[in-house]
Amino acid sequence: MSIRRISLTSLIALLVGCVSSYDPELSLNSSLVVVSGMVTDLPGQQAITLNRSRSNPDSVAASTAITNARADVVINGSETLQLNESTPGTYLFPATFRGQVGNRYKLRFRTAEGVQYESSEETMMAVPPVERAYDEFTLRGPKQTADGTPIPANDIYIDFADPGSSRNFYLWRWRLYEIQAWCATCKQGRYIVRDIGPVGAGPIEVIGCVPDPSLSVTNLFDYTCRGICWDIFYNTDINVFSDIYSNGQRQVGRKIASIPIYQRDPALIVIEQLSISPDAYRYYKLFVDQVQNTGTLADAPPAPISGNIKNLSNPAENVIGYFSASSVAVNQYKINRKNVTTGSYRGLFYAQTGRIPNVEVLSGQYGVGVPSAICVPGRYRTDQLPPGWNQ
Image (cartoon, rainbow, N blue to C red; front, side, top):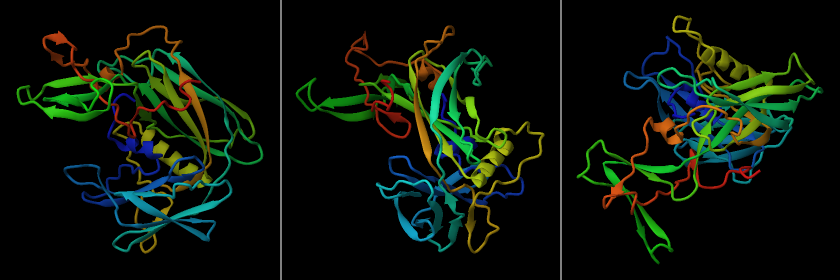
């Protein structure tokens, strides 16, 4: 959670549907189509991303967007919904679109070169609500410091009632909001804002980091956030479950996450419980077994994991990713950290950077006249109060 990793599992933040595993037979410069996305009934605009992952001597996982494709989602075999490319490789559903339980969905797209791909048809199934979320403090979390010392964690659990009327398959994903006190870092430069007026009360113009050649090329200045700000983190592991041995039984204490504690401030975790098809479950479970549970480098490498998307003219092509449909039950849980009884916590900034902030000094007085930085919203940061924060 502390450092955003560029790895296979980092793709899981996009719903873990587009990750390839190691295959010694894949030659350098091989190119794999990678598809990420699913249909849900959540509010908010939905998207499908299309990329091409290339292995070469300089970059093990270089990725380029598949642009200018024609992408459609077919609903119940008859209605065709055209997606629009918003940014390179990202294809948006209409803003008002929501998936519906019982409907069937299929993705198909044609690249600019004329190659056509199509997924299998997926049915959106209902999902039971999360009855309760709670956490437990543990001194020995899964993360470690550089010297191998375990970092304490909040382990997050949920309870829910599994319906007995049908077989059910689940996938969980989550995002975490942690308070961030530092909003900008300038290397060999200074952060500049300009009052438009009236001074101190009116709007400001954010200039941002301005180079200062009088500073060392390695100099870093850090700037506090002008207002309250949260950093957002996403799960990077796949968590799936089948009720084959417990159909209809109430599920108690299903572990969803282990959140390392880097600061004593409260945090918020938004848990999403998804229903998935049997085929989607098998795909995700295979990924867990081959990638997440790989033992050592001495173990036999896993085979490539193909999803449910095929090249219509070349079915043997290995296309990475799984297009699925799911109803989603959302639970927002505030981690107040009142049960954190021991440990030394140096803050989120230190966990992310491995150093303490270096504050610019003006006029020989610590902190005087130094501007604060704007919390710039994006996928990994927000200045808006997270839903459920004040519950």
